[in-house]
Length: 454
Image (cartoon, rainbow, N blue to C red; front, side, top):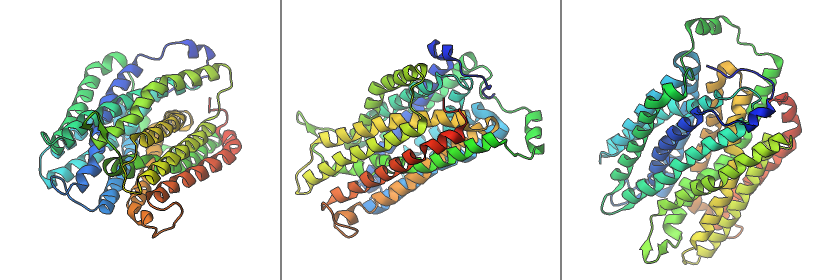
């Protein structure tokens, strides 16, 4: 099922969101619990010389980036299969089951089962990730002013899971009493809970949403030339330009699980009231800030939409890059304070994650919403997959850059502040360049959208 085209309905902004949003919120919460819970442990496990894989940090960072790239790359294929053959509903069920199998494989304490688990999660996420976001878009008519706030509320589900996952899985994984594989197993339990909830309530709250295309629809697509009208071609071009610029944002933002995670582990004071808390717990700062501020951002977009003063999506995204640049200014400060061998205050990381999160709220949920507005209806899941493809490129670049952290810190690449501060300064500059470039292109992008960015 796809969204129907309708004129903008201002009255819809005052209506409640569709009940299916609550179900997709909960399902995505448990899937993200599993993903972020495992991700918080991944690089720490890869570099652990005692009970983990024991790789060098540069190698672990590259593998971490490659894994995350593939996690965001496979949704392109998953979106295509859902659009053309199996529908978003079946794709989500298949993906959830494979993801759970992957986490439980990682819970087996052997190296082959660990890497088999990573492969299964990559494949399962391909079926799952783009399709749950597409289903959120299918709840709203074209032009419904609740769409951006609906995606922001949905994004709270993402981050409720992202908050709980590192706390639970991080505690188990970094605890000498349990160990890494208990943390990986707990992530699998979260995915199973999300899948069972979806299967139990889908028919009640999402009737007719996500079904496989009819045989006639598939045959019609096969017979068509596939040429899009001029206005849709323009919107597709606008999407591809935006996909390019979001790479700058995610390349910086995704240092969270690699270089920033290792900074938390090695160079941050984590002693509170005599208890040294796990480094992976810093991964929960981002979702806490999301949960606190997402309702404010959702209400803000809805209010400005009613007043017809809401900034365009490219403006929001340019603002996101400015905010992530400010966040890395704090990381530069934290790195400089720890270069003499002292442990940095945890407040440096907390401040950085807060600014990164405010940037995320200006970019990620509204970006998901924009894809459902601009993508041709018959290719909705495919283009959602392409949104994640841009993130995949970012993940690869983020991992490759994290791998040279020590090289930059030693002054072998360039020398500005000295030490690891130079590494974090890279992302101050790259984020500002990306934000300025998008800001300059905003008038042209708005023309290409032909009024759909509402």
